[in-house]
Image (cartoon, rainbow, N blue to C red; front, side):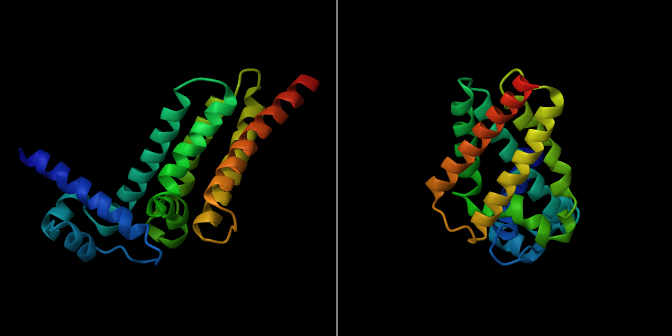
Length: 197
């Protein structure tokens, strides 16, 4: 294994540890010593790979955001009718963010708890708007697609955030069904609006 390969393995191990730390139920759990202790990676390699603690936190957030986008894009690439697409996308997101609550807390809660990524959450939102926008059935004009995608991402983010925070008294299956219905209803309502214009 080359030094580059070894650093890639160390980086992945540190990112995985960072998901657990940044996604813990307690805010402020991320520190260099804890990340190194849980992975066996020395602080020297930590700083060589990430530079600073804040750079590390940003890399962990970007990694989780990338995984969420990839899961949604994979779900959207299969094809089928819009209801099936919405179901696959919600199932994929829930599997990543609810079944793995540490991942969900990184993506949805950490930007409110961790100053190093306070602005990153806003910076990644357009990527999610674009995924939703591109998934809509044909026939919606660009303005309606944009409005609906922004509204849906906002609503879904709030639902998942409340669920992760245990302030939404519904089960996992009820959450999934509601989110699918929300997406399908929004697309159908927008389609009717365009047809009636």
